[in-house]
Amino acid sequence: MGLFDALFNSDERLADRREKVRQEYLKTGSDAAFYEMNRLDNKIIDRMNKKYMKEHPDSKPRHREHGWYLPNDDD
Image 1 (cartoon, rainbow, N blue to C red):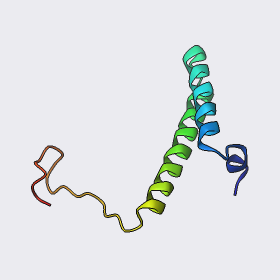
Image 2 (cartoon, rainbow, N blue to C red; image 1 turned 120 degrees about the vertical axis):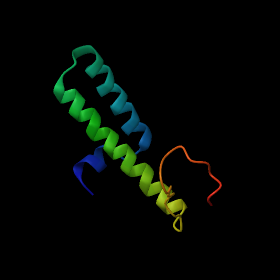
Image 3 (tube, rainbow, N blue to C red; image 1 turned 135 degrees about the horizontal axis):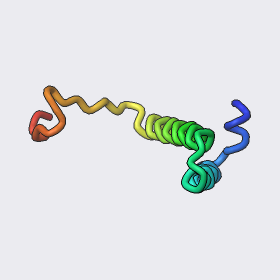
């Protein structure tokens, strides 16, 4: 467990921190805030993926043969 995990041990605190960084980015437009926001986004997505895999251990990825806008009758 890294320092980052210890600081943001709950999803709510992580989301609150991301919102503060987002507000800072909107005010200043700084690159540091942008990169911090991306880092927090990656952490949030990682946690969401881990939760999903824990709840659905046998899930299979969705596969479309030739594109995004095909009908769903191939299952």
